[in-house]
Image 1: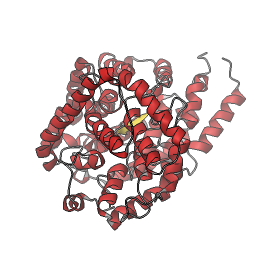
Image 2: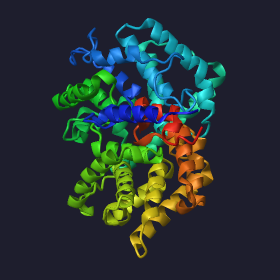
Image 3: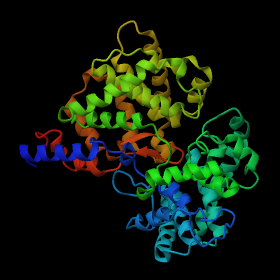
Image 4: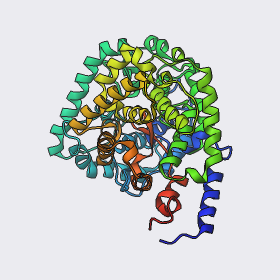
Length: 470
């Protein structure tokens, strides 16, 4: 398809206006239907759970307006099809509608979607259900039934559902001790779906609240904590979240690292082959990030396994981008985690969850210099993790979001084909065509992903990146 120079310039100008001119970084991240639905369930009067008014009407309105034509809520895959994440997200949305007796047609359409598609979505993950799903989905089924919803799963599906419930029991039992040691994600980060036997009391909830009033920065868990305790700090957190993001749905995590969002955006522009059109904007992002890294020492890195995935995602992107743009940056800004035996052990025990992060660590080591032994160790470690994940045929898109052959191929290519042997134009074209590769970092029940506004424009018009590619 021929694209004129004027068309390219017009598209670039539009993207700059939408993406990089004093725009709130949160506006780039896709909302979580699951978390938004949980905030929609919060009653206006926490002392009266049967109150007939929601506290956050804006979230209920979002649920009403953001159901897909197929009847589900949540993200879809590269081909527009629902994913495993859509099952709990749709259940949460239907429960919210049922609770406030609104959107009857929406709720019926959502239930019809679940009945029609549960078997297909579950069968694709038989014996390989993600950890988060095995915890969340049974809890949402129980809550739906408690709310009075008739799920009416096919009889032949009940055996598979029993397997998921059994898997949940195994996870909850094994995580009792792990959670006490700080393993990620903590059971309390799934407070909203924990069965009564494992439910935390008010004292345990209060003990684990962060300084911002949240429960592990999870909107859904914090909403549940507020409904259970009426805690004012939880309420202040939820109100702050709504003030920041309410009209557009809430993100999977709040607050988010705004520098990580910007780094991810710069990385997207590089991977799409658009860097030449956004030189000034990318440089501004990297200058800001570099100032942060020059002030920060490796000892200031978070040593909590609960945040290590996000921290490593940020450090790997920053290290690669800064070095590629000529900045002097220490290997320890990336390799700090190797000195923490607990974190290394945690990554090794949760390889699927960390596979996307390890892929970025591995890519970052492409730009190491001779004699940088710390980076050699990081490369060796990340490669071993990726090789084990590839050999199992699983990856982050399987463990956290959905099974993804594209992500599997990406890992295999990174391991088999040296960076210096690749052709930029083919790399850019592949990235453009891999619609699901816009993930930022793994979250509790899904990846944090970019919205499709300006980025979707590029994917739909790949010749913007390379006019010679028709």
